[in-house]
Image (cartoon, rainbow, N blue to C red; front, side):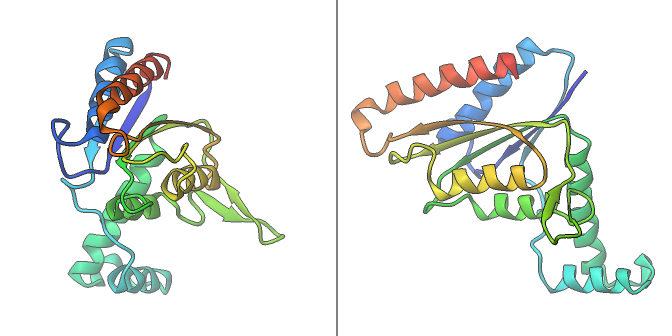
Length: 207
């Protein structure tokens, strides 16, 4: 039995968000093809995602200096616990699906904050003797689902960023499916989405 983590990065539901529709279509096909797998479906807009700020820097500095966790300020305790929890959750998964829209050529900020939680020196990557970063994550596979109003051929900064960061921490098996051009060519928006849905459902069956 495999463990699948689905990360959604859009505050709207599938009836108002194309990227969330792709996520729903993936899950429907995946659960049908893999009924025994353990699936966690997580929308980043429904949970607390800590940004790297003064509280986290303060907590990491104090813990590194040997200060007991119980002596951290409440905000430091809360944010560092959340941060570590998302790191651990990611490490415990076998498969990762990330679904997001392209917003201003980038991923939503909540997705950036989550990616920060899974890029942790000493846990998901390290530096070797030559000062080069080496990914520590092994045996995972990932699928990136993204929607965009224009045509980018998955060469937009957001697509490249997600691919690069997953590769950076050692996830080598990363596939992507993009639904693009719906706003540029609204007359064919439904056809574009249906073609993407077909690809997503096929990918889910084999994932």
